[in-house]
Amino acid sequence: MQIIDWIAIGVVLVSVLFGLLFGFGKLLKFFTGGIIGIFISIVVTYFCFGVVSSWGFVRDLMAKLLTAMQNANNSIVDFLIKIGIEKIILAVAIFIIVQIIRIITVKIIKGIVEIDNPVAKAVNRLFGMVLMLAVSCMIWLIVFHVIQLIGGDTAAGVRADINGSVFKLDWVFDNNPLKWIIERVIPKS
Image (cartoon, rainbow, N blue to C red):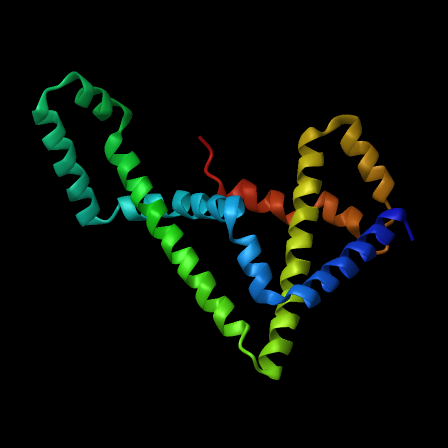
């Protein structure tokens, strides 16, 4: 076994331990709160913006706002029109709605999984372990992707160090699913 395999075992054990100690409800609140929660809302807003802006009534509202602003004939309003203030207003509105939905959803899920019942407690701990393992795997994939983006001697050195991994981490490094998702989901400009 390679050193990377022992590190992977350690990460899995620590993840399972954290999931078992804290449970799904507390971990979900932690991973969706603060800066991470804002980042999640920004990503969801980005993906929802195109869909929402294509709705008929939203296009009509944006056109009415733009017409009203053009009729104002003011240099400040002209600047706002130039920067696309109607799109900024829509993005901010979507972001606020996504934030509210995220907060309410997390509170509901946290309330459900943290019911004071032996079965609910066991499910909470089990889902906590699964969530922690998923987060750990995502962090591994992000690290591998960043190393591949750096490239050169760094990527070659890491690839050589993990070659022959018992857990096939060398295959994961070469066929990172995160890279596949990024290439197909994020639009090219």
